Image (cartoon, rainbow, N blue to C red; front, side, top):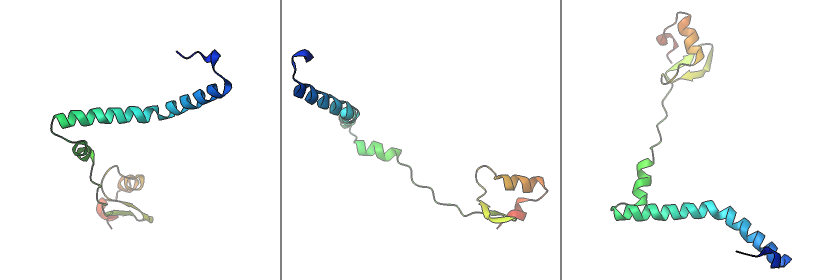
Length: 103
């Protein structure tokens, strides 16, 4: 244990600086230690960390061309996937069909 009462002002300031640096880098040091443990376990089982990371990487989805447009505002489009925009819901409620909204 450090006896703070016996340290000079310069020593106290250096200690304060060292403690602040240790706090700032704590998470990084813990992450590196965890990664090293994970790599050791994977090597033990014949795998690499890169293989695990590669498993979690998803390929970007291709953009889908819009199939429907709002007749009142052609800049509003919908691909036909996912939740229907309000303008589609309103048009369908007004008696139009999706064929009427097709591009």
